[in-house]
Length: 565
Image (cartoon, rainbow, N blue to C red; front, side):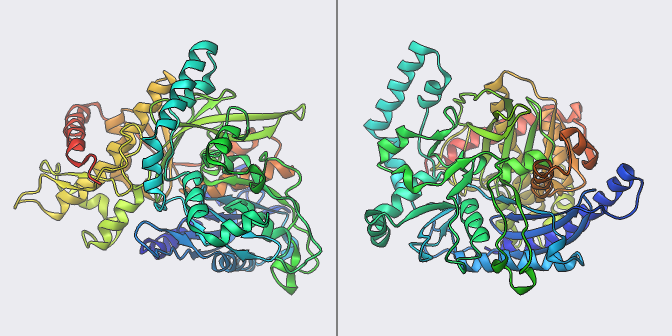
């Protein structure tokens, strides 16, 4: 929770950086001067911050606003967001960003939305009554349920039956089913937990009044009905495909809510939003009553809705097969584009719909990716700051470089367990190898090295999954501004690490997609001039051998922290 003010300040700094970068590109693209006639409002709702940027058709930031999300922790392992408080922040940042841009609401051409995935609530949308707060993707309330299911006879039987079907048919969806399991980050276990423990929700379901909202579907609903002030408005219950794909309820192979998951867990898919593609023409318009009298005569179209990781892929311009980006934020997310075919991942990475748009013949075309996550990436840095290992995260690169190595001190970044390819969600966090001569600098360097070790595990797993040798990684997010982390990643992976001038790729990606959908730009070729590279970190072969030896020793330490809880 203490990270929110820090994230908010970082977002304000990035707003200035985006503007500067955009201004330079705009000058190159159009010969200088101010923006054109189109203004896109890009709303990004993350785990710690809500922000809105106003960009013109040259991708120059004209105005911005940011506010911190208040993350509630009512019990150990519970992480929630109060919905109406969040809505007020969304309204405020949009209004403030328009004012900051010195525009009127009527000047806004369209709105685009980027949201965190797998954060959900249930409510009665007719009355506006909530059965519980937003339960975020970091929440661990269903941990016991996850363990019980993953060790159950039913799960083992399902995996075995799926593998048998794969051997008979050769269909990759059955291979994926052979390693299917529940994970805390998915909506499925947390929804099951609430159904079991929330009496009001069970009553709402029995009366067919309750429904599930993902964060994007809830925002879309509130925007289009004017926050419920216009009772005559009835809008579709929809979510975009990139928000639904990681829920655990969605089958990326069939592009639909999974009937198998519905059958296994008794979840009626009628309470879930209808899934639409990212270029859907029915997102509708912002209802003017949502924002007050000055918006009364506006009819601003919602041009795009997409998840934060898809937005980051687009912002990093990962459009081709085998393009890969790593977002270094609260968590670290590696996404490798696998193209028009859904890849059955078996190492703990998982296949997702990267995005879905209509082609020139108006046929819906899905592009897929595989994803791996390290949920405690930025969290490790925030925790270390709260423990007073340093005052400012921006200082950590210099602190780490003040010592030549960690003096055999290692850190295990496992506050949420260790994800793929280790897949040990009972693992503990901690230092190992401390001696009386250990300094804060050794500990800070060990922390930063550990999060890179986890990233390299994900990279190696992705290369193994796809049988491809990667050449370059595009990085974004707050931690990507750390030069030590980026150079250490290049040295260890022996891959080039490319960092854009703008670390907020999700804002740019949401803007790019909205501009294409709304006809501001024609195709992705028109977008290439808007990405400016800040620095490329080249791998140093001389450093590789000794760093690999350190990672090997860290890998052996995994067993010391394994299966702790």
